[in-house]
Length: 319
Image (cartoon, rainbow, N blue to C red; front, side):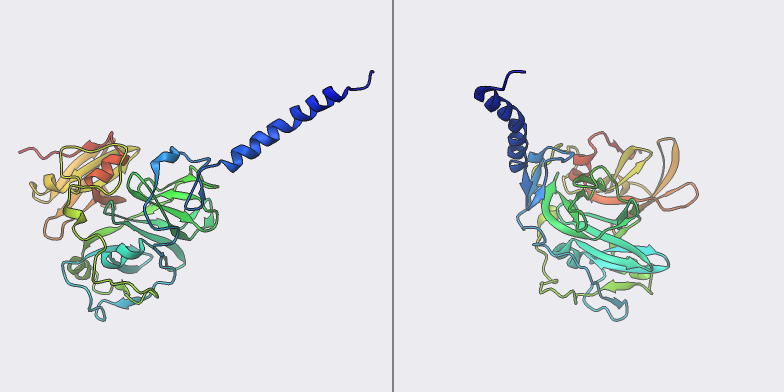
């Protein structure tokens, strides 16, 4: 075999190194926002928007403290709370606190639960803080998708969409969190139902004015702070709806429609009988199946629900 010429050697080296240089260049150009790698994201990078604060600029509460209902004096009856009953424990999370922190990493007995609230979408949701058997704790990424908060887990830096409960990037990409029922209602309603409830304390370890809303006026305005993929029509963008999913089918129950009823609506979704229970006084609603078991639902602004579920069914009251 004749010796390889200097020219051939250079060509061979170029052939071997070029893919490595290309890979390195692509890695260097991998899209990142707030320090999160979005190269493998399930959604288009341009649809992930910075919300303003950096990662953890809105601090999650990792060591929540609670008071008894009797010892709680900063809540008025009409103030909104997220209520959770789990493993025999009852807890209320005031929206006035959640507005400033968005995530509470909590425990109900031996079970880790993440309580989340997105002020931009009006969505309070709770999840078991684990996936594939691995425990997780969450922080606020400072990023948004469809105006909804993106959580991140501190174990793998995966980003999670709150409303879909799905990881959109990172090691857990495609995995979903198990949601548990949350009651979004007034303090007077929750306290009447559960007089032995615990209440998230204002003693959070952070200096925030919990008597002032950083989103004052937002819930009545037609304006959105950020763009959404699908813009809803038919109702005020901030109209509250009860949204649910049954076997992959989504349906919204606008409070404007439920207010025309006696407070109880019997419906059939994906071939299953359900009952919607609406409370006009406390502006809350829930859904139960035919056995009376409470279903996982979310109270959300209409624009937010439609932005994620443009194919949604809509309950329309008929006289």
